Amino acid sequence: MAKQFKKPDLNAPRFREKCIYVLNVHLYKRFKQKFPEYDVSYQDFRNIVRTYNEQLAEGIIEHRDGVELPEGLGYIFIGSCPQLNKRVNIDYKKSSQYGIITTHRNWESDNKVMKIFFTNNHVKYKLKNKQIWTFAANRDFKRKASKNYVEDWNKYIYINNNKKISMLFKEAMNKRTLKFQKNLKVSSEYNEFDI
Image (cartoon, rainbow, N blue to C red; front, side, top):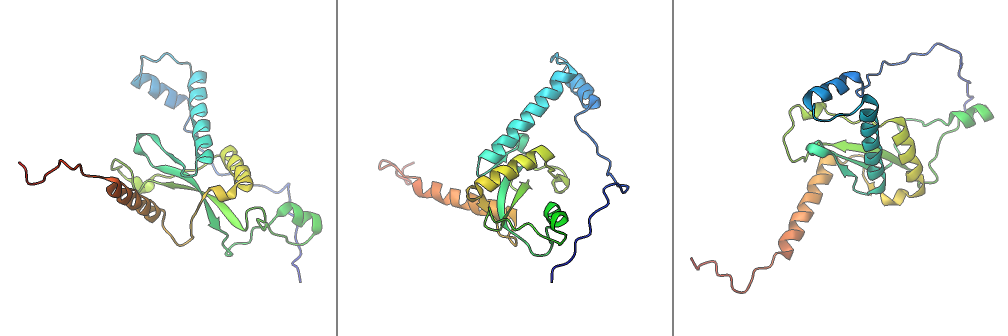
């Protein structure tokens, strides 16, 4: 027997979490103090940062292996994961339409779920307090990535739920090293005992 769906009260009071926007006037003033040689208005500064972030998001969506962030801050990529059965993913639109609880089934992607991964385990430089760094995608990026994922979900790396991302990077580095060592050829003129 299907459970009945109780429609939500759209006029009920809501709790909204406070957001901190990093791209603000304070950041612009700090940029002007640090780099006075750049004569950029605040509006141009915002446009440059937003354009860069949009291009970064496009790169993450387009490339299977994702993108390495500048200054060695880490890697961001999209992965294809099996759907967990721990949480019910309710389709609220269909549930309110039919009056019973219906769920999303992800038929388009063969029951796989898209996840955006950020890791900074294997970066070039040691970062102080690297365990507190995180990445939170904005709504536009998530929607664009989701739309692209449904169209071409096989393109992305399959990641098992019980495997660490750091181990994935370590395996890739080991494969690359072995491939390099196999391709390394010693010339016929080389003599290791000739000093």
